[in-house]
Image (cartoon, rainbow, N blue to C red; front, side):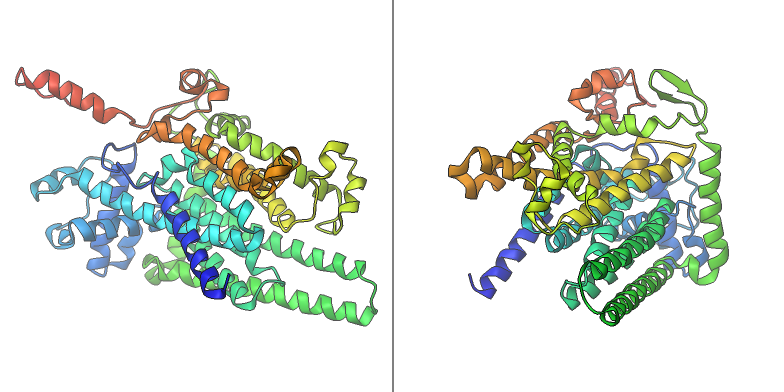
Length: 514
């Protein structure tokens, strides 16, 4: 296959993945609304008006801060109601339904504008996920990247939040992109243009994550940790290779300079992007940043304003450390569970050896794996990125667990990482198992095992269209059992109930309202 054919094949694969990311997220966006979405539509309208009138301070709409979402809402308004800033003579409050009457007076339905804002958010999410897949392809190779990307494409919990005009789908997608691009950026074996391009993308994605929701700030210490671990790894490699001390010192110095330069440039680009995309930072940077992080601290300490139901009990504050592990079990899929179990066949041997120092199949014997599993353990390029993803999952879970205010969606950034880790297990260990048991079909075993897992994943998610939030892990008992364990429902099916009530009352000349 020549260079041109290879290039076009790569382009088609990336475009195909973009389409698969979009398909479960891009349809039926006007069917119903969930809690808080009207508030974000109102904030987007105020944000648009502030931009149009040059009132930069008024682009501070909320301390989340939700800037990326209000940009998405603004672009949605530009496609459906471009004259909004001239028609609206004031900002509207988001606690009451102030915007809805105004829109209807001017010939627009709120659901029309909400759907447009959702579509813009979906496009931003699809772009972030597609770029993540592209960098995963560079870091892991086609098989693991494809398996992980497809499991993520049909992850029901991620699909559900990607379709809403809310923050969590955007936050999780930007955090994923920032992390996987950073892996490529810090790989000194990678081509120079890919390294520096990935570094810029990671920095921009980090800024977008923080602009979306304050927990995105976790990416800063995580990036510092990744840089430090890469530096330690370079030290171990230099000591492991017999060479002159002077040469070792030169290697360490070059690596240290490279990593520090990368981290400094990463911080600079992230900071510049953060300021450029939030006009409030142009006029009141100190006040703006202080408001965001003081509010985040208040949320972490104060907990829920309203009681929350969890594990059969009603809590008036923090539901406890068990909340996120339990909700994770309910919101993930059996496919991801099995993929993670398979991934242990790669990660455990890597952990028991030095940081990525296993360079030969013979070293697998030191891990004391069962004999039937030893043929599965072979050196691949997925060890270090996979272990770093594990650190990301653990670190973000610990951060969110510190807060007294807990919702299952607050842990959403962990779900894409788990999907990718499961994809590694499916494509590597699962593929090798298939090769071992079905040697006649060796060349087709990996694609076949990936296809089986992805089809099952899609089969679990797609029947819940368009109410993907109604998915609960069938192994745990599904939706019928979930009502006894956790707080459920965010407006799914309310449109159907309204239609039914209107049909019942219309014949009697009455109206139904909630």
